Amino acid sequence: MFILNAHPDHNSALEYADEGMFNADSIHKAATYIAARPGYAVTPLVSLPGLASDVAVASIQVKDESARFGLGSFKALGGAYAVIRLVLEMAGKRLNRVVDMSNIEEEDVRAVAREIVVACATDGNHGRSVAQGAQVVGARSVIFVHAGVSEARIAAIEKLGAEIVRVQGNYDDSVAQATSTCEREGWMVVSDTSWPGYEYVPLLVMQGYTAMLTEAIEQLDAPPTHVFVQAGVGGIAAATAAFFYLTYGERRPQFVVVDPARAACLYESARLGARTRVADAGPTIMAMLECYEPSLVAWRILTRCADAFMTVDEDDAVNAMRLLAKPHEGDQPIVAGESGCVGLAGFLSAMRDPEIKVALGIDAESRIFVINTEGATDATLYERLVGQAPEEVLITR
Image 1 (cartoon, helix red, strand yellow):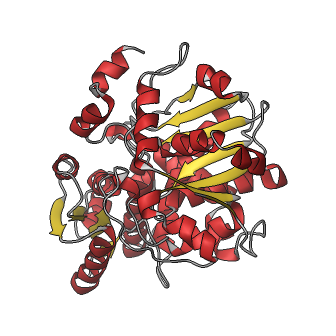
Image 2 (image 1 turned 135 degrees about the vertical axis):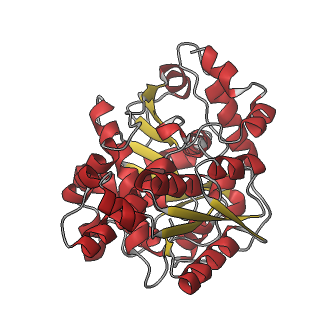
Image 3 (image 1 turned 90 degrees about the horizontal axis):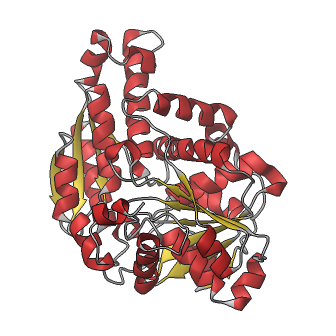
């Protein structure tokens, strides 16, 4: 399914609050904080000339987040950044002085951090990021996981020192329980989705995501003409759309939001013209994107900065995983998880439909940018779907 953005706010300026959180200063601050974290390394931008030639576009560039901070996902940027910012801001207020990454090991800052509990709901990757951020600053983390989160992903969160709370139901149920528990216990909820009255923290999370886009701009030979980015609640899509909007202005690339067909909350919101909660249509293989209501702030940004919304089916995601693992001749293999390759899956689906190609203006001169948002965060599932273990794919590089 595909729809052009017909919202009356399309192409209008970002709202003041969003501009205040997404501007040159906030983007630079996020990049600076993240570069100061232990284990920071720029992730690769991988060119796929063989695939580009096959589908008749000028280039396909993949920002590969499969090894980010050892967590295997772009989420290592957002949740952790929000936790670090929030804890250091609180320490600064209590100590009545400026506190930033240069003060992170000071004992009085650590003493404040040890009193703070941060918590969130997760499909897997956001929870790992929040737990890692808490570990960096010395705070305690409690992560709420719903019934669909695999044991492998839960174990990965626990390794970062987090306390796990299991929730019956889906992601939205875990968000509700995490929020109510935090209100009762006085904990700091660090959610990647937003609702009325709760926007600052999700915007910090989204700021963290822009660090990879700052890297990408420096790695690209030429600006992209088309960007396809997957969406759960919409945080990564909105952060990317806002970044390119602020970077390129009227010359910004065409931006397409890609949803799983079984959890198409942004597509349905675009179709109906208002933020919409969709029914649970059963689990999707794209588990990191299995969300049923868009983030309020993400939706507000995407109504302005996205040009189209589309969905992909289960087979589209699996086929994209396999294509990246066994790529065209001359292309470098990439380990992409079930949700990581969805932007590429959306682009390939669009290329099979002449009407969509025309609607988006994709031709032989088009330069495509996508993000591999995660690697094999569940190695057993990856091997079952792709037919190779992640390490076997990497050996062929």
